[in-house]
Length: 273
Image 1 (cartoon, rainbow, N blue to C red):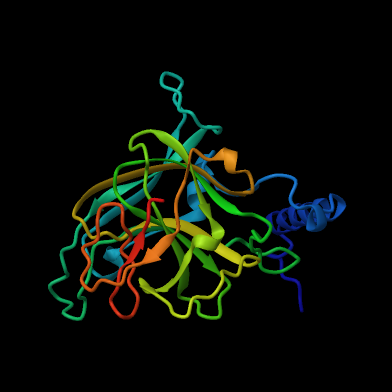
Image 2: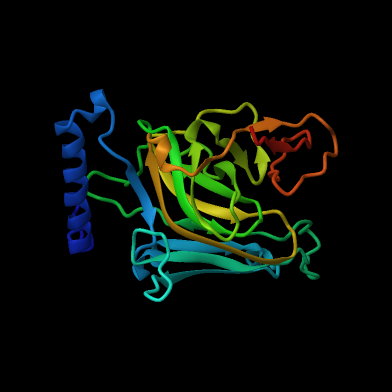
C-alpha cells in the first residue's frame, strides 16, 4: 500500500504513537491478566475542541422541526461547577412532533441526539474502544426531568444496530455521576428491539452518544462533562437498573420508561429496582 502524505501527517503519527503507548502500558502492567489499572476515558468535554469530535442529529434530517444544539460551556469562576475540567457540553433544543406536510411517507417525528464521530485511524488500523474488561459505563451529567437514551454503536455486522439504555436524572438540575452496566444495554435497530438479543461487541465500540426520542413537544436540556468506563461502583451517585420486557399490549409509557418496542409492539420498561 502506498503511503500518502495525509497518513504521514503529524496527527496520524501522533495518534499512532499514543496508541502504541496505550497498548504497551496494558502489556507491561499485565492488565490482560490482572485487570485494568484504572478507568478508561471514552470522551470528555473539557475543551472547546471536544465539540468538533461530535455531531448532532434530529428529525430535521427527514424534514421535521425539532431544534438541537451541542455547545461548549466554560467553567465559571463566579459560580464553579462540581466538574473536573475547564468546561462541559450542553445538549439542548426543542422537540417538535409536527410532521412535514410534503412527505406523507414520514409517520413519526420528534427526536434529537448527538454522538461522537468515528475515531481517526492509526498505523494499527481503525481506532476502536475495547471496554471488555470493564463493568460500568459512567457519565457525569446534569439534566432536566426528561428520559434520554444512551446510544452505543459497535463494529457490528449490521451497521444500523445500536445498543441502548435509558438515562434520566435522579436529581434534575444537579450534577450527578450515573453508572450503567454494559451488560444491561439492549440491541435495537431503527428504534425497535432486535430479537434474539446478542451481546455487545465490547472489544469494538465505535461511537457513543445520547438521544431524546420521547416525542414530547417542548424544550430539553442535558449537560455532560465526561464519559468513561470503570469497574469502581463507588464512582457513581446512582446506578440505573436494567430493562424488563412488558407483556401488556398498548402499555402507556410513563415518564421514567423508555420508548423502545419489540417487533410485537410491546414496550421495554425500565424498572427502578
